[in-house]
Length: 396
Image (cartoon, rainbow, N blue to C red; front, side):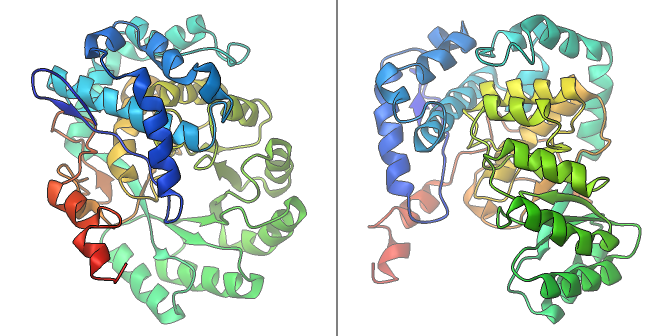
């Protein structure tokens, strides 16, 4: 949390899926001296310099650099500053970005290590390309929202009957894109894929997510059996660090696309994935990358390489975060919804002051100033580990 003399607070967080939160807290505390005592204006006057200041500490780079738990802490801190900036401007984060000039946006990006793939001049050109029509796209988003897909129907461990029920409910609610998990057992995956395709019909879009379980050869063989169900993409088919492995899989499974990004640490890894032709869909994560600054860099690189950005949102607060990034991407960068769809997972939104609004399987643009990530005080109190009443009730 960051604050100003005016009483405004900027909120940002990162998370694990259980064990490891203590490491994240320690990493945030290690970063904190880099911002304590500084003013918001001292950061916003040079946002690229601010980002380099946060990531450039020589001693903390030893436990990165720009990856792992220390980079998760970078995201929490940087996103808190952006939340504070948007609140000070009286705008939701996406609108703060949309209202910036191309020059101001480029001034937020650290091009170090990526200038061989994207130069500042190229970034300016990409941002100017559709600038004259961005007001039309903003009006469209306000009226219709950004298209979403649901993962809720396809989790592993569900009975076939439950999967059928969830698929029918998703279709009834208007979802046109549905994702299923795969990788545990080929025979079961084929059965579940057939079941889901039967329920959603031939015209809706099916995506698959392997969560890194396969070797490169396994991924290719598995997808040979799953290809008849016409998935749009296979997500995280192997280790997120294996750029060349992803490229090999992408060539072998085409026209099925390869998607990854939720565990891709930084803009340099995304640069390599894009340069290698290893991905067809770029799944940035607002807590894995080092905050908004680095997300802007990856969005613009993906635009240069013609790869749609479909952010990862399968975690607490990620839906609240990444809706802002997708709105910015469409309004200011891509000007196209082709191949672009934003993940939606229906859980834990009740803990946020400005939860996402889904209408007709679309994200409606947030209106409240900030980055939509501030949690309710009562939720923070209840779930504070290990003394909150939610933990006490479990005897911990």
